[in-house]
Length: 155
Ligand SMILES: Cc1cc2nc3c(=O)[nH]c(=O)nc-3n(C[C@H](O)[C@H](O)[C@H](O)COP(=O)(O)OP(=O)(O)OC[C@H]3O[C@@H](n4cnc5c(N)ncnc54)[C@H](O)[C@@H]3O)c2cc1C
Image 1 (cartoon, rainbow, N blue to C red):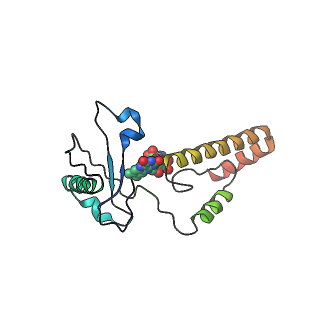
Image 2: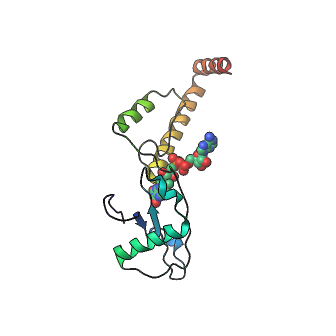
Image 3: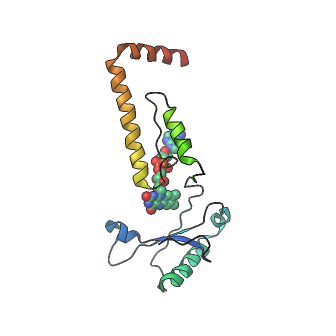
């Protein structure tokens, strides 16, 4: 459940974690994740745990009517945890990827999406790129001797 930035709420999202991942549902309990703090709202990181939980519960009540006290609550801070893409991001990423020398690859949330599936996809593509370059180099002795000479120069 995502909350638009101009809504008068502290939370920006609630994730029904035990619906998303069945192994998190135990004994009829529901695991809910509340996300607070948007880009640039560094002050939220300084708010104490009890107050953050109180804000999340107040917003949950407003949105869903749920008032039950949590069986347990855990607060985890992830300051700067998500890259923020600027205008022209895709062109910038394309320039980086096209400018990489053979055998070098990039992966991760700064490129093609911050979600775990997008990060896994960039990881797989990077591994394939490196493996393919290694394979070509093994088959081409000239390329291998050149790269060994380059390595010798740079070390
Ligand atoms: C609070 C929060 C909630 C999120 N929720 C979701 C969600 O519900 N669903 C979803 O799909 N995505 C979610 N994301 C996004 C997703 O988790 C991240 O975008 C993704 O994990 C980033 O993957 P990554 O491989 O780029 O970086 P990371 O997962 O951060 O991996 C980078 C790794 O590199 C290591 N490392 C760093 N520097 C060095 C170094 N110099 N040498 C060696 N190792 C190094 C780090 O220790 C780390 O293990 C969430 C992110 C945050 C912050």
